[in-house]
Image 1 (spheres, rainbow, N blue to C red):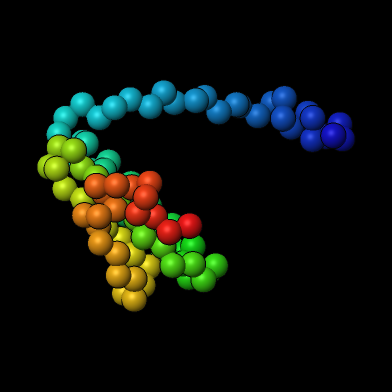
Image 2: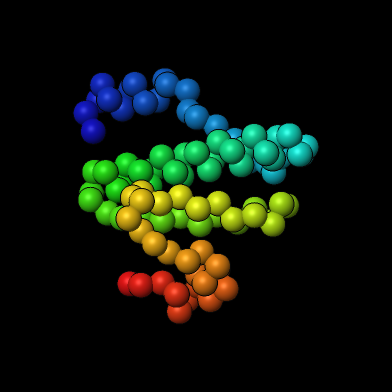
Length: 93
């Protein structure tokens, strides 16, 4: 590191790590879940588009006992119930 870079680092305020807390209310949990779900779907879509992968995501919501399924292509024909009941033997690697 050169001297100027070192001096700049020494005068710049450092970032403090925020401790993540679990959402307290049901509304906060639902909002966080929705945002994270959308973010994961967006990342899967990007990976499918940019890398040419076919991806599927299965997310489970224990509060509602629901599964959310996202697939990057409509050509994929996966039986969600079969995968959820026996996840290790149902996946094709």
